[in-house]
Length: 266
Image (cartoon, one colour):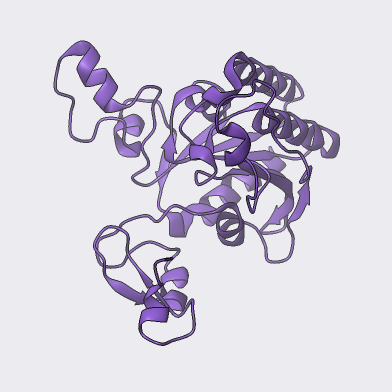
């Protein structure tokens, strides 16, 4: 039997109430969305789906999806992988498209951590490269919002190849002197952090995001030392020169707009 939502248990229409995943505080869904899905009680940042992230970031009605029909293929016959990529609302762990942000034209790519941990496989790499090519053609800035556990192990070496493939595309983009804004959200790790996520002309981290290559638990077990409590969190990386700026979710669109204004008028 499926678990009932908070609204169903109270005999109310679905979608009226929501609960913080950290402190269990109840809120009206409308109020929660108006607070950018950040808990006003404990400050927990709920992970956003691509539609939610796009809604909070781009101008209303301006987003036009591109390359929506690309789907992963179980070419290695990896046990259980075929079932995992079927019957999903999205075809893979990234959504790409054209949009406007406060009137500025952009190409934007948004990763989805709920799709196999936002893992990067052949489709993610291909859609990013095509997004780069679209931005090159339109001569407009590119924005990639990352949320990933890294390369997709079910696609083996092919998934690792996407690191070089996406980095090469961004090198071509840089030679064209076009702006790439990278937004790192919780979590951005593994092969994604080791490739396109850290290659922005500006690297913006969302407040409280975990960012790194290997996770802190793996690092502690390797070096056999206790790490600082805030190790690999956004502010820690900013303080050590790995991130340009840490931004709260409610301010993200405004900050991105300031960078777009600079790049469009330089």
